[in-house]
Image (cartoon, rainbow, N blue to C red; front, side, top):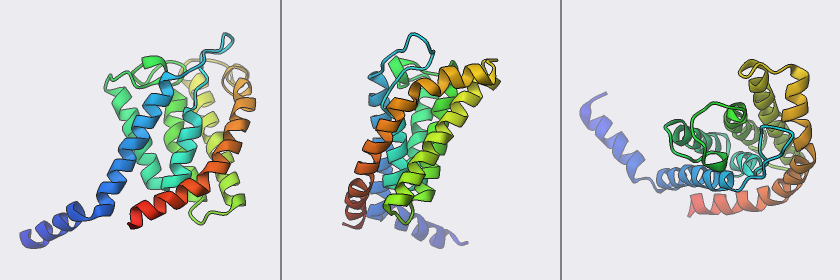
Length: 190
């Protein structure tokens, strides 16, 4: 590739409006996740707090697609891993009881985005459920592998207490996903 061709290719990417819109969306996802993490409800019987982050992680994939939604989650993780207090309650660093759930947000956004590429009510519902299961898998998996809990403890502490709230989040996310996705499509196309 010649220098002129490379320069032209870079100019095309930098000047394309959709590139900047998607970059803004990635930053917006990271910012929304950071804000949602500051509103948390600690539960006395589990080391994992209750937040709205799971719903936002799912919506990021359903609305923005697998790539953009997951990149927003990666940026969020990167900010927290570098020491910024963006995780639940102002925490930072990828350690402690919530580390697996944080990584699960990336997987959830990707899974939901892939499953809802051609959205229908059934696909959105299945995608949101699969994304939630991905968060549970990474979260409970980390409790077992990273913190030495038994599988039973991990499910008891890291999954069961969240089932009722996550069921409500799934319903709300299901109602919001398609209208927000339509708005996102208009923004990208404008």
